[in-house]
Length: 309
Ligand SMILES: CC(=O)CC(=O)SCCNC(=O)CCNC(=O)[C@H](O)C(C)(C)COP(=O)(O)OP(=O)(O)OC[C@H]1O[C@@H](n2cnc3c(N)ncnc32)[C@H](O)[C@@H]1OP(=O)(O)O
Ligand SMILES: NC(=O)C1=CN([C@@H]2O[C@H](COP(=O)(O)OP(=O)(O)OC[C@H]3O[C@@H](n4cnc5c(N)ncnc54)[C@H](O)[C@@H]3O)[C@@H](O)[C@H]2O)C=CC1
Image (cartoon, rainbow, N blue to C red; front, side, top):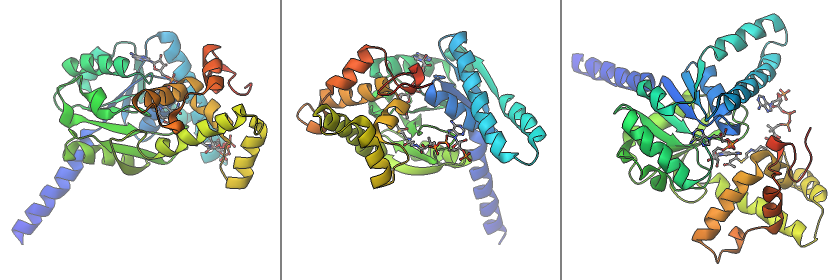
């Protein structure tokens, strides 16, 4: 009986240790995704450092987090709006910012990378962080389309490297894809699952295959919509209405492309096309390429397929 009790206490304390292990999180990249991940981590009691390349970008990220929290508070404290401000300030206190990733990872349990969708840039970042971060620190990438194993190959911690793929807008979307690359240890994978649950998200387990689950289905669908429009078979407005009213999607494919970012969408499709040039689902789109070349990247720049306020 005493043995059983000791075992039970040990198993409780080891699962508590697993939770306690991820308390301090460093998010690299304060754009659409990084700011959302920082907000959710801070809202669930984690201590967060958000890193980007300039103070100006970080100011914009902080403003975005605050206005998203205002939307949350407006709902949560509809009856007592005066409590909403205290709620927002308490969460914002959990977030600090930095432009020097190497110096802030020294005290972190988990690094979540959400920078530009470019393999070389991600590898350079993780290669540098690997030298600066403590042994126990887990590295995770929020990549939409790149193999986790390729990103991890710039480090010497393949066992403590996995994928944490969030969805936009992070505060609203419940799913996190947790990716176990060939080198990811079971302990790391379990910690990432636990962390996702601690954020109030629903994790699903994914293999390290292109696009994991959601993007392997969603990205070809969005590009098919662009090709259908390029062939003159439907206006973007009609295609969007058709998919919303005919398939029950909350956004049409063109609205969603603008929401995701046309640059990010192009990075994804170009990367897959390079690896599998004969797959028609991964064929580049002249219209998408033209908009990106014009700097029309979607909602984040004020114009993409549509104009945004
Ligand atoms: C590319 C990748 O690697 C992976 C990806 O992320 S792919 C993209 C995945 N995302 C999607 O598919 C998003 C599809 N769209 C949607 O689910 C919905 O349109 C949406 C949740 C974004 C917005 O919902 P909506 O009903 O169209 O608009 P809206 O009324 O403004 O918002 C609905 C609620 O969400 C809240 N909300 C929306 N965005 C928010 C944000 N960033 N922060 C906080 N709250 C937010 C609003 O406050 C609102 O709350 P109430 O209804 O309680 O008032
Ligand atoms: N946009 C989306 O809907 C989704 C994107 N993703 C993935 O998340 C990642 C980020 O995407 P977004 O947030 O949309 O991009 P974004 O363009 O909005 O933000 C990227 C941020 O990273 C910063 N950055 C670039 N290089 C950096 C570096 N070396 N160090 C620190 N900061 C750096 C940029 O200044 C920018 O603020 C990409 O890998 C993307 O594929 C994943 C899920 C959804």
